[in-house]
Length: 222
Ligand code: DC
Image (tube, rainbow, N blue to C red):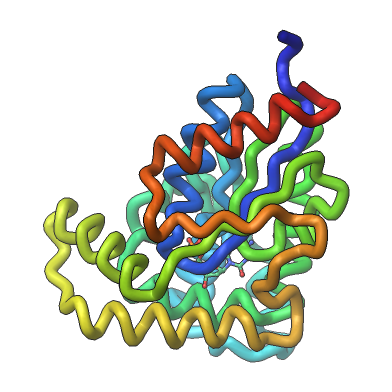
């Protein structure tokens, strides 16, 4: 079978399992994986650490002009510094949602995301992969799960890393983020018309990965 050379766009709310699934699908097809949430997290981390408020203004535009964001596999760099682990905290969860609603933040990351597909096959996950960044993706998946299941997964993930969190608080934060991501004016989280809906609430990761790989192999690019 020829190597997959197209784009698989995976969108969905926080905690639906997108990054785990996307990484495994990429490995199964031997193509690159792009975690676009990491890019938004990195920019939010940068802007927040410089006390730039999440509002469109000249301060924000200047700060965005001053920063370079790079991604290399699982690593994200801000002006050459590896921030990959600094951006995985509940505090960054919150601010990333605020900054990612700003048009100039999204504009800054658009080409960087598209460039990743020029190197060959790609599995990209985020909120607007199938709708805005890769509207012509060969396979589009909208991966979701109930808010309770997503909060439990996030709780387990953070606990495993030694981060102490409260489940109820996480659940409320997930609901608030869903709301913010779905209601923002620019590139809101929504299922593309031609996306396949996958509800992972009662599915194992293997089942979800298997379903997406099968879809990719069955498409014209396999
Ligand atoms: O997937 P994540 O939780 O790492 O994403 C972090 C934040 O970035 C989240 O609030 C949604 C936002 N995001 C976005 O707006 N567009 C993307 N393509 C990816 C993430």
